[in-house]
Image (cartoon, rainbow, N blue to C red; front, side, top):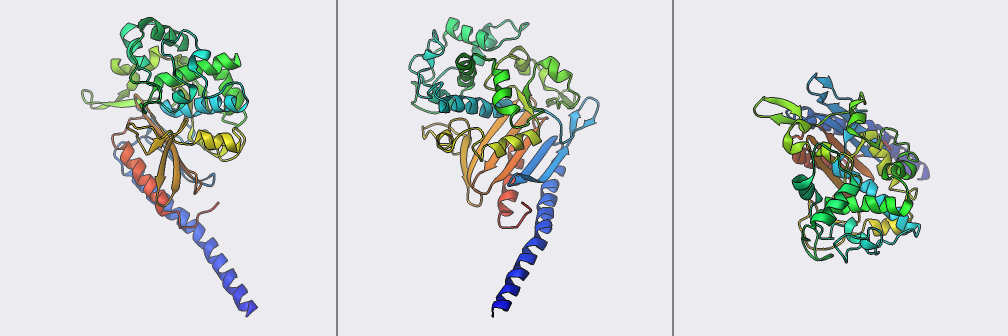
Length: 374
């Protein structure tokens, strides 16, 4: 009887092992077909299972002007996915006792004409702060490049009204993350970019990740420029050539809400580091991922202290963040119950981007009960 049981166990194990490559191949083929048949999609897509890529491919062009094909190692602007790095820096300083996320913002940025806002409310977008970009667009000399000091100066000088009282509701705020970037510099006495390298990029081996100036991007041979389709020219053209999109140039020194550029492979390292305690201890990590629960219009189900929160019947709890800059659409989706990861980096603002992301998530969900190589 024992021998028979052993034979059944061995046979089941062999069947599981035999199914692994086939299941992985089937998923890979479906994912490949999804993007290969999407007209004009340009980007890099990475799907990982327990940190191991099961699909990793580039589509389209790094440079549409010269038809230079994209490679999986190419560098993309992350847009608002950058906020995930800013929020981790703040939470780490909170963990170290160098600040408290329930501290008032004016403790670190005196003179800001919006009293009663806490760091927590900056993190979870419940501050009620006005849009800094509208103020800068109206008043800033666009022949110059603005950064955080100039943005703070203009918020103080022109003092646009709050959107609502602090903590009353959720409204996504880039202004809040500019202030967080400045708070990090104030507390540490270090440049924000240097501190990102010290705490995150260098320890995690994210060798292709940085906050780059326009000149640094131009000097990078594997930088994927952002493109927008021009109805007039019937072709894709550089996004920053449009007057409505060139704010990425004259706001090119801002720190906190965006400007990080990276690769899919580096972002997988980032994802994996958030499963352990390399950056935050268990208690701080739990607080970090707790939704605010405030009313508002969410892209997904809620927003924690740096990530959007969501759920899926097959994948369980989801933590995700999207990015949207002229020419770029980016997304990191962390299926933390199943330890699956989806990274999508697009450099031609594809019209079907959200639909493709949903379909890819559905493919990943369908693969949960299929064994894949860990």
